[in-house]
Length: 425
Ligand SMILES: Nc1ncnc2c1ncn2[C@@H]1O[C@H](COP(=O)(O)OP(=O)(O)OP(=O)(O)O)[C@@H](O)[C@H]1O
Ligand SMILES: [Mg+2]
Image (cartoon, rainbow, N blue to C red; front, top):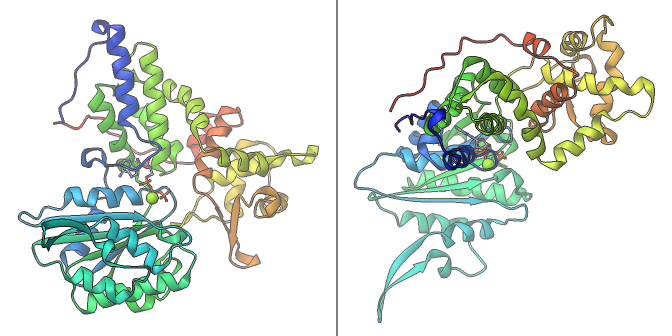
């Protein structure tokens, strides 16, 4: 991908309009990545999925928090597999809450076809046409056994966590076990929101050995930087380390926010006839990014921090401090970790954990939308944002409403050295 060279002075109004459209197209806050060049990082996760595909008897399971890029990873898998002379058959379906084993595999087989010889000549048929309402694990095994070594069949069952029936997930586990035992040349990849695989698959114990587990963490600084620079580069937009760091810092590892902030920042620069995105443009992007967010997040936020009495005004700053609390790798934090950020946000009050214990507790209750989840025992409670997307939102709101300054925000993170050189063609 060659870098586009543009000179602001030479651009006509039509050029600016086209550039704005290019930027809007390059970023995809609302949808998974579909293009290899626009997919950033995740090298080890891709390698693990390739292993699952290339090793007979192995299947894959991709799990992690909501919005970290699981579907995007599954989408680029067929684009990176390099197996000449073999035909890739890739099917990805989204599971539905009420899916049964039969309805799930019907969906898969509706997307797979074969050519049947009939009296009137060859006819293309969908595999699903061969089955009635019933479809058993054995049927699935037999169908998938039909593919020989010239094919690479990959079936991705996305949003697996939404399936309500334990029987369904148990039967899928049994099927994977059978595919593995019979060394069937097809790979099933389960994708879903979960902390670990036991939350995703009933009967997972039986298939642990044949599943390659791909844990999707939040995206790293380097990966998010690449996400922004590849797209800016494609459109001929320049930027600097301050601007990129701000986008990354505010995103908390969640690529949705990086897409949104980088897109709005570039559009603001373009609207002001500049081809360079600076720190201030990211500030201007906050409104756009906030406006575009899912309404339910905004409503939950209002519910969580509302104050009916004067002494309630602590809810918003405590939640903001929670968004900055140091976490373990599962995004969990202790109440004591909230004190330091809170004392920076509201200086001079010397808050200790017990002063805001009531607020933390309230955040876990229905009345405040269960914005936080709590695990562990009273001596060692750990909290996390129920919806990871809420965490960056709380920070954006804090900045937007003047509850937070850049200086305070950045105190809580050590800024890495960011090399802003554009990738070359
Ligand atoms: N590697 C990546 N490079 C660039 N953008 C990415 C990458 N991974 C994800 N994204 C972007 O992040 C957002 C979320 O991605 P995606 O939908 O794949 O996540 P998910 O984990 O499947 O989410 P959900 O849990 O809601 O299904 C999308 O805007 C997508 O374009
Ligand atoms: Mg997804």
